[in-house]
Image 1: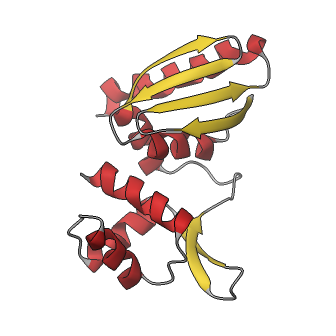
Image 2 (image 1 turned 90 degrees about the horizontal axis):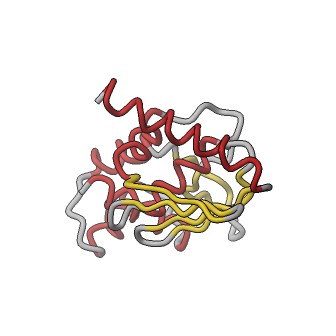
Image 3 (image 1 turned 180 degrees about the vertical axis):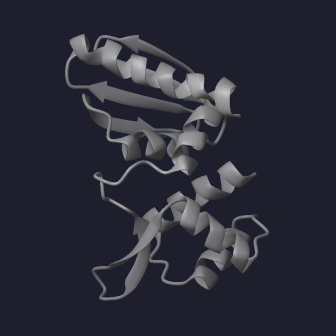
Length: 155
């Protein structure tokens, strides 16, 4: 439920100008998520959302675009717990996730700022990653395996 809710939060902040936790909670409730302000506050912190100035001159929640910051433990956990498999073809990596977790897992991948990934497109349970060159696919897969292998050690 938490991953679905956080995935919905990422969707909502990308399609609405949400300026308060109360507004976010109301939109989540309208979308079938029974949340408290404390839950919304925790989700904002875990997703590392920031407030940015919108084109209308108001502040709104947004995904942090600081690529130099280390990936949060939350995104690492989302990646480990939602990725079910991945395959390659040429310079494309197709990543399968649990249902409804594609956007959150893609955000986790994007947050890592992995070298050689130049684009990602997320659906409900599938992510397509475009690598800069087919020769760099092993580097990407090695990093994925490394991230997934920590699941048995730490979880």
